[in-house]
Image 1: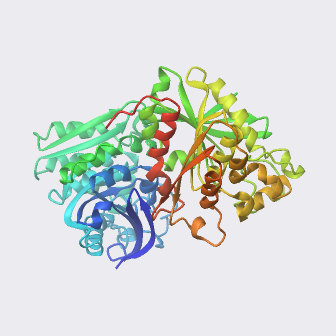
Image 2: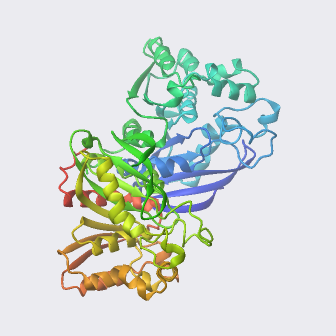
Image 3: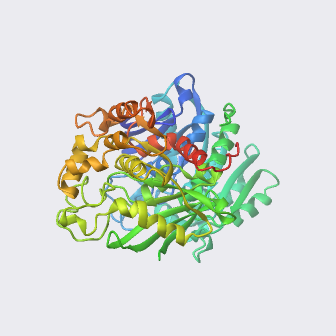
Length: 292
Length: 292
């Protein structure tokens, strides 16, 4: 059971923030659901959006400008939080790139975190089941796609490839493509899973190598002026993903669009979100957008 | 001289935050300017956006989703802050609807505030002069329109009507239409001007009565589920504006669109911002939008 926290009209549809007690995260979790106007009369497919480090469910709904195209196409959007909240674990609030706001979309195995930090199971299993039962008749059960930004782009790529029949399409903005080989990923995998090696199971480039699902075409936008791309820490490594896909014998294709002059912010996301909404809406069989 | 605080690419154009030392406000002020891609090759007209209580220059740029249509039409947007900042006046930070973040777009006459709180002169004179000289060749000098939200909607209506040849068009979202007769307005006018009566010169309904400029057609969107519309305080009073315009013998016409189910938030603004961008772009002679 999920309780409504707030409800606001947006582009003819309804954006709701909801809270529920998560079984897999063992805490209260907040998420947001956008129902386009079409959901009033018939069930619609769903895009899951995974946000980046430090975000909550609200960054995307407030800043991405997603609703215009989602309303035009009849696509619902579900926006989970980025980690468990309100749990008492020493060190959970000490740094911005680990712990609160940084669940990394894995199921933690280290005892300290394993009681709560199960964002992988939360996003792939518990949340879809909850959302589909809460909005029965408004959402088409099992008809879903996935996208995200930065840490959430890593989440979209990895959850998508680890569950090859669950999502109709996968896209990402500035994803962390090679987390076993960058500071954000090594910190997360060491902390949650005990080692970088254990993180191989959640590394997009590794998953491309082992992918055996239906042929996949992933859309990625990456800002060429993104500090995390150009910086020494080399957090994103889009070329590693391009190379892994090139070596996959056509099993996984990526359209990697390097966007000149754009940074890592929601201003970048908002500039290209329409393309991603249409990419997923096409894959999910939404009706054509009205021209306006 | 204005210094660049940050610069980000957005829908092919550039969003810049800038700071300068304001003469009329006697303090450093921050504002934002969006230059659409067209400004690279030829000068474009400008929309001034005035934000509401508690806002800075950032709320609109982050949450309104304005840039898609502005980029399509070749319209620049200038977003000032809502009050002087960093000045030491007793009581300036005590309440959210007066003082900091609540300049009300008047020139204060009460001695306590008159040294800094000159948002009327700032927005109508100092800022356009600064922006037009800073971006000479990119902005068409004197070619401008004005819009805003709530307190900023009041600002757009009143600055627009008090300067009938300065702006090519006026629009507003959920404006405070009758500030001399509501709590927000009476507090502001009493504080900044010494009396509610002195506020008559900044009351949209009064200005309609006295308007003698070229025939004017104002576009207003008002959410029907807006708490400030439906609440006891009766802060907005759109009907008073409709009645004043009806009695103006066609000098001022208002298209008042009551939007069923919408509230006072930026979710509401984002749902209808395209219509306002196109309304102003048409009035300013921007080229037609590309269909996409």
